[in-house]
Length: 184
Image (cartoon, rainbow, N blue to C red; front, side, top):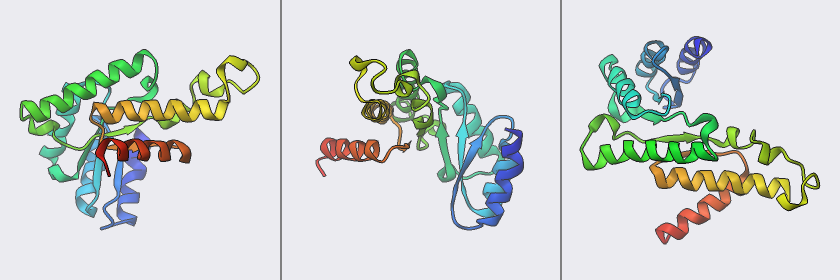
């Protein structure tokens, strides 16, 4: 995160006024990145380990620094917990944050939420197992796409507003699912 605090403010300056989404900002580097976001009119990604209280605290710190509420996106930093038991835990934490925001009126948790999970999905052993090594597992590309889709749908249902995805077919399936759910 030291490198982020060094590089991201330079990117913010070079792209002044374009309203980039810049991050991750953590409790260790939020002052430098937050100052650049304010100075150059961007949006910040507030990244914390999977914990509602830490997310709220970082949002408060960014607000105290002067970052406007409409320029904060929460990142529950789902990391390697995007599948398996980690998915269930992450889902629960994201859901708790969203419920606190909506039902308890917690304004420091009412920010959009980003789920940056695709890189980790494609690192899982299930996606790396090549077709033919275990015929019961099926085609490796299809398996990876479906794992990315399953994780994406789960995070949408947990309250994510933005999904960071990798495979174009997974994106198409997520869009189709959203259209089916919204009737559009």
